[in-house]
Image 1 (tube, rainbow, N blue to C red):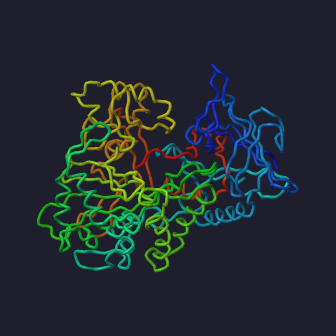
Image 2 (cartoon, rainbow, N blue to C red):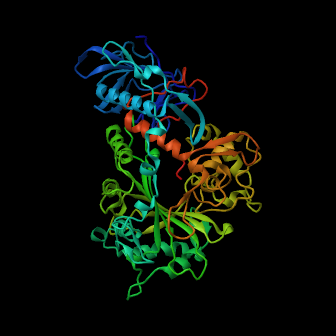
Image 3 (cartoon, rainbow, N blue to C red):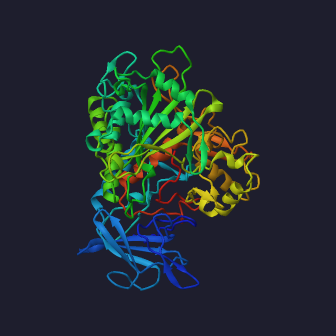
Length: 587
């Protein structure tokens, strides 16, 4: 069998999980850099199955990095068999020291690879010749047909193709990605409807139960009802975030407080919180690097919509999203987490077995004490609100638990990630070039999906404390940005770009509450598949399909061995695939 090298296209970088280094040309010294955020480029990789296993493994891995990458001679990676050292020092399987080819003897899970071959063969039997969509960031840029050599016999003495394949057909989206069927979100054993007194008060998936778990009274001493009211008051009073004034937003939250049943002492009755569960969402696609020791498994989310029992006055369209960090670490742990979600597709949606399996998953992040080292020992990363009574009042806010170590932590209003304050593009802003200069300065990182909007730029506050329906109608146009694709990618990563013009979304919601207050939440075109013409340049047309992208990602993560590379030399010659680094787009 012929040897195949798996080349990675220009710009594609494979994450390695260590703060290794880059060379400072002036000092010829290695300067530290976090390669999980700035990974080196890999130009080829091959795994050769040994004819006779030796201590340490059954295959020789050889990974060649780009010529302009200067790294230490030893790189530690995390595979199914544990931590492994890739070497470029001429020892222990490495052929030549300093040739930028890193080698290691590893224990490939051949049985798992054969099971994956059989699984994919079954998929082809059901769906015909499989085609994998290829995404650059969140935009679909092409499709690639599964190659026949994927099914080559895995026998000793041969070279192994280690392409990373994932197929949307393998994932039951409604079971494993955005779960919004009424059999789940209105499950009477785990949810509650205060309007007709049906379901289970403080059931596992009710807003009141989840907020009480975040407050974690047994550990923190916080009263859950007061904890929730304190959060609401942050939106009903003026705040200052990152140097920006954030005005009170009483219209929505006065209506919510008015609709919230109270106990005899006047406190909020959490058991009757006026929020309906809209969706349970798997965001394993937000994980840190997996192959090389990722430190988390992404997020999982509960999405709630405001529901008023007495509809005498207009109902604000408001969603509240509880976004939890997954504490899994390392390839094997994060793969196992992905496999739990994928396995939900084998169960009948809404069946007793399905609901029990889903509860087992949600208990791992939602119950009190799920993250002992985080505030309140809660796994919550942040709480986000989205909505408004009328379009011009639409806004998104982000709340995080304070970092107090003694006693309990309340919420604080935080910056909205990846989103500069909309005032930086207003006519009255005294520094109108800041936003354009920022995008021009950061264009390489923006195009590589690796930029992070900073708190300040040019010595002035930059990251906003709220994302609102401004800057539309002008949007993030920025006519003086040199690279128009960088303009788009920057805008797409902002909250108000992603929820408005850049994705062809007109009502701000990617998961919209049902108008009647009951039934199934609706998804935006961005989620289900849409072609969007650039809102300012009339071209190009971009295709988004979040459910497809996440399905491909979940299938690839759950079923490939840890050390896999994308073959861009042949099948991917016209485009490169997103490397295994965190997706900075938080929504």
